[in-house]
Amino acid sequence: MSFKSNLSHFYRGDTREFSFEFTDSAGQPLNITGHELWFTMKRDAADPDDEAVLQKRVVMPPSQQSENGACTLILSSAETDSIPPGIYLFDFQRVIPDNPPVVKTLMSGKISVLPDITRSNGA
Image (cartoon, rainbow, N blue to C red; front, side, top):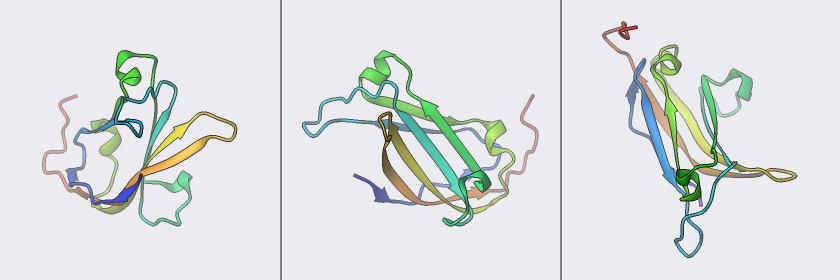
């Protein structure tokens, strides 16, 4: 199932974390080992992926967390630091390895990046 929803804003240069739990139709945890989670932010839905403001892909490793259907995608401060403040379109997709891959859009909507005041990240 996918749905449209606007995510809460975040500040440019901040770390942002998104967590998901996958279950089967009976509500039992779904083993997602080897599955991919994609997060894409664009100015316009028609923009090609190589022009995305940000695109991140995480492959679920063999772990207890993956076997229990849980995954986390983290946008680091370095990744969000170069995003100009503005309102963007986003989506999350889960890609299940197969031939061809099974692609499921989990969520899409808008997300706002706010200007930060402190530009130093302490590094």
